[in-house]
Each structure stands twice: as C-alpha cells, then as structure tokens.
Length: 466
Image 1: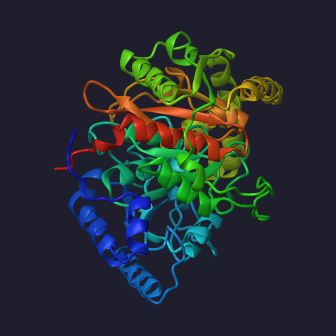
Image 2: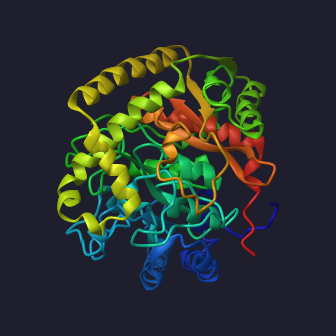
C-alpha cells in the first residue's frame, strides 16, 4: 500500500530534535494521536503511558533547550514489550500467573534507554510467556493485530512491538528473541529487527523463556534506527550471567560504508528444497542477494545441514528449558495458564535427559557449520519466513509441527541477525529476510542491511490504517 505517513524514523527525528526543528512534545503528541485513533483496532499495547510520556517529553524538551542533549534517542518515543521489569508497573508477560508481579527495579535495557533520553509510550502485548507460534485469545490480554491486515497474525512473541512500530505508534520498540521472537514479527509486520550476538545486550530483568537462547534487541522501521538503538542497549552487565565483557563498537558511523568487496553466502535450500516456500518469498530473498551483487558484493550459494535438523534440535532444547523455568507454576497453578502456552510448555516435560544432551551435542556441530561458512563469507542471508502471515484466528495448537522454525538456527548458533523487509506478497503483505554475521560483528550486519534498504527502496510503503 502506498500511503503517506507523517512518522519520522529515529534517525530523522533525532537530527531534527538536535537542530531544534522538532519538539519532543510535538513528536510524542503525534504518536499519542495515532494511538488514540488506531490502537482500539491494532491492540499493540495493554498499558499506554499517556501522562507519563507527556511529562517525559516536556522534561526532554527542557533538557535539550538548556544544552543537555543526551544523544540520538533523546526525546524519541519507544515501546516496551511486556517482559521487561519496569519499576512501578506490573510486568505480566501476558499471563495470569504474573498479573500482580511488580519488579523492584528496572530491567537493564530499560535503564539504558531511559539514560539515553528515550520516552516510554507504554507496555506492548506479547504471547503468554513469549512462547511464539501463533496468537492466542486465552491469555491475559488479547493479541496484537497486524497493521497491514488486521485479520492476519503479527508473528510472535514480540507481537505488540512489531505492530506498534509498523503502525507508527512509536519510533522503536524493545523485543526479545528465544526462537525468532524479534525476527518473526519484524518480518510479518515489515519492520527491521536485531537479534544481537548472545551476550551483547543484557537480559537482566527480561522474563526468560530459555536460558541458552534468550536475547534482547531493538525493533525499528529501518536498520539505521536499529543501529541507533543497539548503540544504547549494548554493553556488559555483571547482573546477567550470559553477558560478555567485550568492547562495543560504533554501529552508526560505518553504516554508509557500502558492501563492495564483501562476500555474501545465500542459504537457499532452507526455502527452496528443505521447505518449498511460495514463489514470492523465493523471489524476494533471492532479490536481496541480487541487490547486494549489484552494489559490488560477491554473492554465492552455500549449503549447511537441512533445515529440519536445526528445527529438531530447537524443538528439543526450547520446550525443555521453558518447562524447567515454569515447572513449579505448572505444577501448582495449572488453571492460571492459558491452555495454548501451557500445552506447549508441557512438551518439555517429555524430553529425556539423554535427548536434551544429544540435542546440545548436535547443536555444537551445527554451530560449527555456520562458523566455517562465516570464516569465508562476511554475512549469510536466508529467509525470515517460510509462509505468508497466517490468519489471526488460526487454530493450530502446535504450528511448529507443520512448518519448520526458520529463525531458530541462529538462536542455536548465537550469531547476530538483522531482519529486513525484502519484498511483498501479491496481496501487499510484507516479506522479511535474515542477514546473519560473525559473533560480535553486528556492525557489518547492520551495514549490509542498511545498504540493501537504501538501494531496494522497499520502506516507502506503509500500512494503510484508514
């Protein structure tokens, strides 16, 4: 849909705010107006911080006018997925189990965004305890709807985050990813989403689904905006046992460095032979490679283990770890869970120790395949989705048994991945691609993503909310 939308990107708004051409108050008011007009239909939020956002915008404006400009997120409206500790508010993960839980301190990423001057617009809907697959109507709050077509799924579990950014309710949002929960809604909603290297962004204060997979990251309209948010989010945190103390590079300055001379490996068999994706997906993902080739990169097809191998390993480890985290509540508060989340977690109770150990062993082998590929190629590209966005009321209880999990390979390997809009289905729904890089090299991933987005020009199409 080609519609006009008066919503700037983070980068555009930051430049205007710094130059005194845009008021944080005006920017927040424009987002609140869109929320008031369209949130009853989209249902991206379950709590909107109207008064708090206005107060924060006034404070940001005063700080900037007095010369205390904190950086490119100062005065920028951001949404928070409801899995992050937020002192003074309930953190529910969309579950009745957590409906009265209030953390005593903020999540690390909430603190980092607040220190950068970001303005929080509200708490965004998610799937119950972030177990993705399909939306559910039996959790604490109703599911978010896709702004491109409200009868279609946003993907999960950062469903409200994807919907809010696509609808222009905020300029960026926080997501979390244990099996594609940033990348799937980014692809389904046509926005950009970054799953950084495991350990790059602190997960302290993020209600977990999996101890060995969970990552936190930004969801934005463009990859340039993802770089701006990641710059604020990244860094070591001793409170997170998975956090790694390694230098955080400049993600923003190299964005316009181009891709000439880079080597790109395409994993086509994931979406052409391991699973036969619709022709629109094949054409769009292949088109990402073709665009980068036109920009001077070397693009070659590569092969790794079949997608079903990656899927099988993820399908053992993820439910087993989710059940481990939630076992006590599953034993004592069975009825407080929505049936869909409860049944998915209970699959983990059937995983034997020997199966879990064998899955972790196979995971190491699969990780080595990507490491070998990335020793030759700067980035790897594959699809972020294998099917069109399903209907919102899809009744499949275990959708991952019908379609392999295309995002889980890079949760298994821990590598950084950026999702970008790669094209459109014939009905106008967006298609997403994954750009995968070496550990700790989010800068190259973001540079490739930004180069593609500028050249392809696909971000000029917006959902029509009228």
